[in-house]
Image (tube, rainbow over all chains, first blue to last red; front, side, top):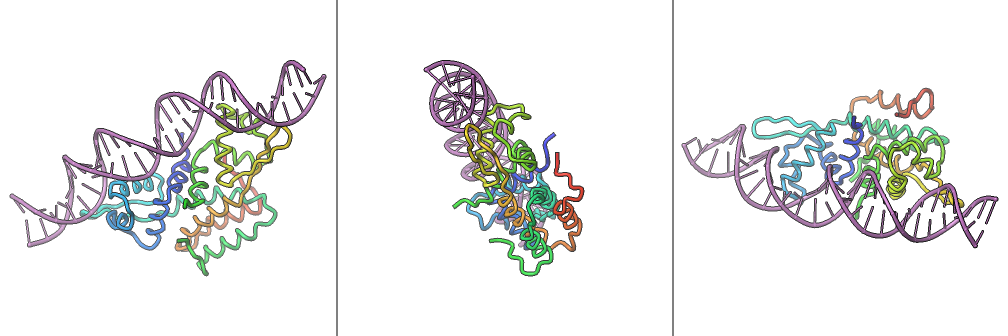
Length: 113
Length: 113
DNA sequence: TGGATCGTCAACCGTTTGGTTGAATATGCA
DNA sequence: TGCATATTCAACCAAACGGTTGACGATCCA
């Protein structure tokens, strides 16, 4: 009944969760290490990770005591495709197209703070 | 202090608001006409439109009694660029690229229900 | 075995969200 | 003028959100 885009976009709406995704862009991380730079409890971060998991934006795998978090960009890509539907009626939209190519080919993309 | 992406993504998190954006893709609309297909009060739709406006996803212009709503895809594009930063380390991503082209050229794009 | 670490669960709390209703405001028109 | 239409405002509500704390289960290791 509920659109998976609901979960993806509401997961992305929180700055803490976007920061977590950016961290996971570098490498897979344990829950404790994800929580380390934030000024909030481990339990709070654990909840954020549940929300990211339910949205399909990350997966978590337990090895021993440690639960590893891994970025899953497919859900992001789905949402991105939905959004790009709104660019189609623009006259040319070369700007977005060039930026798409830049990030896609990794030429000099700067993936945000 | 608060990231504009907060407003954009939380605006997009609601299915009613995404449906409104899809309607505005066709043409500019008056508030009453936006509200017509939904099974909720006009006041509720009015609030949704405020949220979309605050996020920069639409603009509203009053002409006479009627307030016209117009899609503003720039905010969407910003968010889309942020998201595409997460696709860059993927091997090729031809799938998203092809769909980008399809919607961009308007060949047989189906911009969602 | 026992202690330290990893992570979640459960209960609680204040704020925000998404909806309602009825009144109010602003404009168009006869 | 007076009435109909278009839209928002204000008050209210239940549910969800984002955080806290403390207790708990699971795992490693000496």
